[in-house]
Length: 275
Image (cartoon, rainbow, N blue to C red; front, side, top):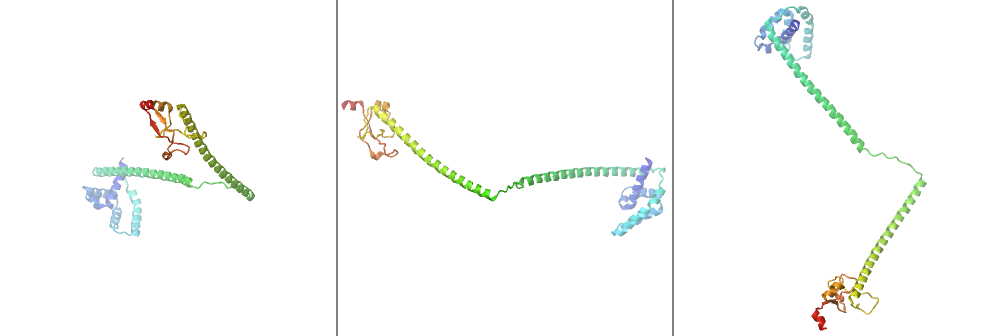
């Protein structure tokens, strides 16, 4: 333990020699320096330190290098004067403790900063790797698809072209036929619905006991009431509704030419008995 303290004492003395102004402000620093320097270091060593302090103001790189070389030459003299068995003065123990605490504090701060820096570097490296992987995936997605090109003879190409042309013509012809059939189907469906309605009205007129209008037996005449609704014999006979034997051409609006709208008349029981 004494040897370690002695080495720390040497470090403290060297620092005080290099920076005497800063350490002179602290209480007892100069006394400790004088005591340690006079008991440990030879005169030429102290002179070397003073020479280094005097050369601090010079900014020339060559002079600083020469000073560094001179300090290195003093290493044998310092090593020869080291005496681990010599006890450390009690006055210097406080300085050694301060130096120890300062060095430990600086080491802790440096370790923490180093850990933070390494963490940031690792995170940055991971982010770069993720960005590189994302760029590779995006490049693969945006890359044009590769298709295999199969070459065919020119004769076969012309043959396929003619077949394609014929197929398109057949498709167009089938579309025209399909459209014509759809139009005919709508016409037939409309005519069928009209005939079915005429037949239903004719049967309703016969069931009601009314005579059809007109002398042409082949001409089907629709018997409708004036509001356009179909004739219901059961309902209309109970209400006394009868179709008069004439038609009104001017009232045709929503019906085909074969449909006639007949005027109606409500016949009460009194009117029926008088007739």
